[in-house]
Image 1 (spheres, rainbow, N blue to C red):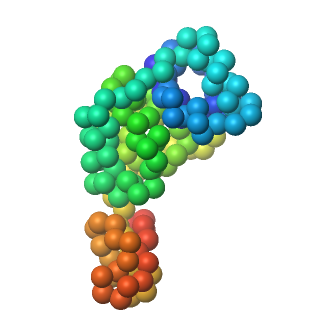
Image 2: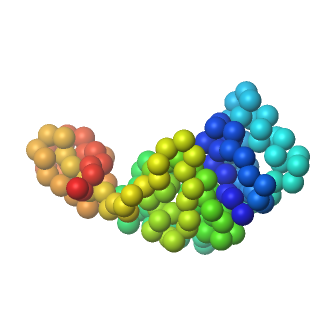
Image 3: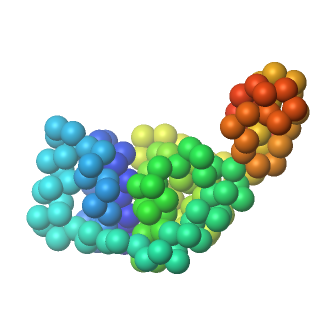
Length: 152
């Protein structure tokens, strides 16, 4: 079963296999991509709502990888849906792919190549350059913004 992110509807992803998504994806779509969602729902696409325990498991994995701050609630619930349904997550979102990889969820990218490696992001102060394992809004030392940085 394929679990469809908004990019699947935007890029007109086709498959004859079973498809599923979540209601929040519909809210991200406009114009033709919204019509595609409606048409697939009308032709039997499964609409799933993941349970709270699975959603929290995805949040923990995203927190550990450093991706939590860039994932929307929709993103987290889509990864949780793919995990619960043992499906293939169809997305081009790198942070979603990174968290899915951590949870052993198979991902199929659409318009881009998939991730090549799982990342554990670090956070770096834009002022003094100090690095942190957890995301801070501001550096506790100098007060400058802290941003996510590729550890490699």
